[in-house]
Image 1 (cartoon, rainbow, N blue to C red):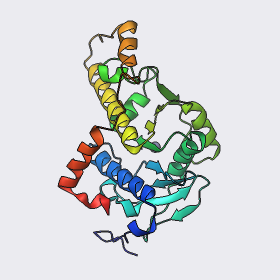
Image 2: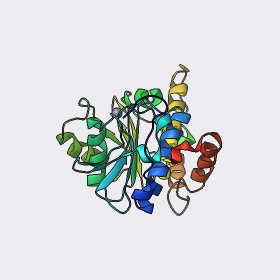
Image 3: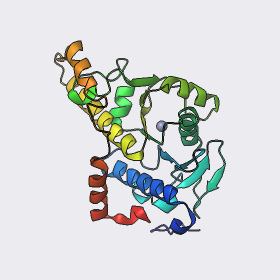
Image 4: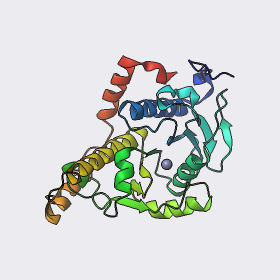
Length: 260
Ligand SMILES: [Zn+2]
């Protein structure tokens, strides 16, 4: 067992199913992209993926690795009950708050295959505003009326918090954890990531506009509703289909080690 650089993690490609391996590669890519686009919080927060052919199990980062270090073989496999089914040979385990948030989602939402949580400055700042996210920009209208809000009651280590978070999220795919950060879920890792990308940008734009100390120009309710509807199928393709291969090309050109 070593924590010296680089971390040496035995490859597990040959000992997991093709479906699990694909989920591992996509999730490791998502951690690298989260770091690349400035959405990581050092070793904190978690992005997870359900194991497609084993739906009571999900993949999560070991508590102690930077997002830029994550590889497909480094991800823990845990059950929704909290059993650790696979852990790499590292002195890093399962973070209790990460397990609480993500197991709550997978228990309550069989349709969800991936979940992403961030503590970006823009996300934390909007989470601290009573008004929440406003439909001030085209990007923000995508989320209009589709965001759940979950009140802050301290770090999520109480098992009862799982039911409370599941109730707050309901059928929504986007959630602002008040006084805490952002959460997106999706039917795939790319979908959860692209949703977070948009939500993060919407938060950044709102804060930039609100910081200008002048009257905000809010689009009419009619325009916001029309814009929001443009994001509904069949008006819109599924997010991630076009973006993900391009994002993987960028990662592969710079450092393909996330695939290890
Ligand atoms: Zn958090």
